[in-house]
Length: 181
Image (cartoon, rainbow, N blue to C red; front, side, top):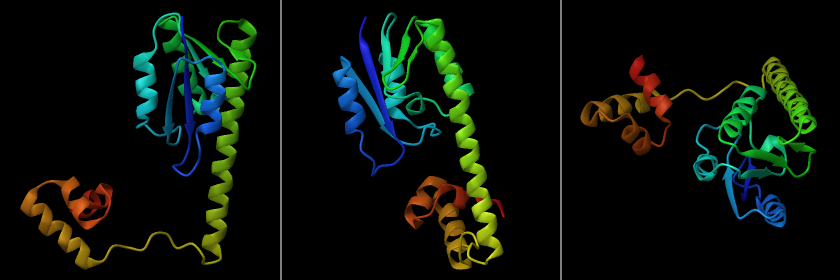
């Protein structure tokens, strides 16, 4: 029965140290971490955490928004933990899956976290719409015809979209779009 911690920040320039210190103070034998958005599907530390946890372990986090991106995501995680006899404990919120009141509070916080995320998205879209009206937001600059031709030429030579994207310093998605045209 071990305590295992998980810390996450959204961007590379944010620090994990405060969360990690709190998790170590709480008695975690190991702390996994990620510097990625919760919505990212490529959270290596999170995947390593899930592989590391064993029955009767306790997953310790500072706050629930560090571990899940939506109510559905949180509920699926809680179900996975429960099926594997792993409990969840948040240090800064009265959350523990060991008690009925802790579970209820967890569900309420998850709903509010998702609501806050939705409001933030709405505000962002309103800001973009306003900027477009004022002519300040025109979207991304289109790729040049020269670059498009280079993509096609390189792809015809090597047939590897990732290699083309890397060599030209553009996203794979751009390569796919160009080749689709």
